[in-house]
Image: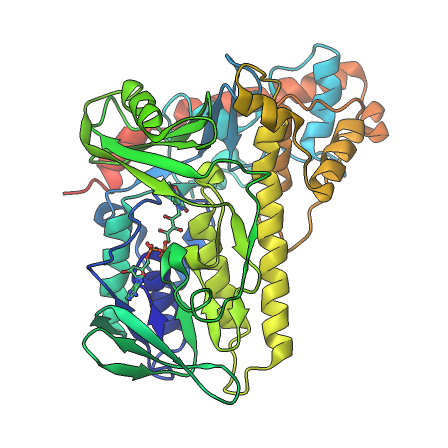
Length: 493
Ligand SMILES: Cc1cc2nc3c(=O)[nH]c(=O)nc-3n(C[C@H](O)[C@H](O)[C@H](O)COP(=O)(O)OP(=O)(O)OC[C@H]3O[C@@H](n4cnc5c(N)ncnc54)[C@H](O)[C@@H]3O)c2cc1C
């Protein structure tokens, strides 16, 4: 039983219907009266794997959700006002010997023999030039064009509709109605049934709570508890508004640091999504809305809408026979577009640890431990953007610069600053390249490089830098523009 028909509910319904065809009886309850949150337009490359699992045709999908493509995120004014860097999804240069490319770059940069780090990444060069293509099959193996990581920007409402159609075609039964009561089993407190406003009572074995921020089952009924991370991520509101398109769509999200938070700009085929994520302790709703409207590239479409949230995580995302997926499980601001990814990984983990009616506590504990580890690492990655700022121009940024940060993040930064090294646990989401790009983009420049780099002479090092930069520049030159690519492959009707 799935309670909630937002992105989380329909992603879960579609995936479970695909993975367990005919073996699970899946019902989804949603209330049009309550509605969905309706934002969530930028994604990460992992979503391609989800679409592959569902055997969704990419061009059909992009057309249906009026989507565009995303090579990464451009961060403006984060380290200092006037700064700009790109977090691209791909690799930087190529590993050489046993070392990652950035180790060589560190020395070359110190010697004045290297350009900015981004010059060695296809994504970082192509994005700002408005170039995009998917991986090419007719290029030599090892060419940067052979393996291009990318994600999508899409209309969240159309995405939920698309998945609903997919799930219903595969047997998921949708019930329109508002859940007004939840019944628990006397002996063990498991959820037994939900009761709709109409009086209908619906029983189930496993309940997925996809009811959004309210956490109807996991919190309002089971009181799983919430770990609040607002002291590290003080933004607690967002105001969002779409505007008309202005110029060709960029193949990236732009995130610009503002006086009390940051704004996003996400281009779709039919409009551009905009929002200001801010700390209500540092700016009022009206002023935030005025600031957002004041910096739009084109006329607004509709009125700005304010959304409230608290950064954090449910203490137990799986409690008894209820698994929280989506906003009911927790929330991290959309700076790195990770919420839909967290839905996807929650579903993947559930499929992996799918319970029988015995609901083994060991299985539940494993699920909760993995979920906590994953979201805490993502949380730290997001905090990095704030704490590694040199801005001191507003109270908000002075708070971020001075705040105490989680110990694992402090250790990660110290190791990188001292040695340029970064270690990734197999179960964490962001790749080494992502951390390196953001750390260097935020101005954390390591003091040293790996000693093995010194095996290359200065001339060899220079040649390595020049060769990679030349190959990247030539590849980007050969790419079509993002707009040309969409027009050719997947323009919406
Ligand atoms: C400002 C902002 C920007 C965001 N941007 C991004 C982004 O760029 N990328 C990204 O990955 N994520 C983003 N997110 C997160 C993303 O919006 C959510 O992860 C995603 O929409 C999933 O929401 P949901 O399905 O969990 O909840 P919701 O969309 O809130 O859906 C809840 C569902 O539960 C139903 N429901 C609730 N109560 C009842 C009841 N009593 N009876 C019956 N039904 C009920 C509702 O009708 C609805 O169908 C953003 C979030 C915010 C706040």
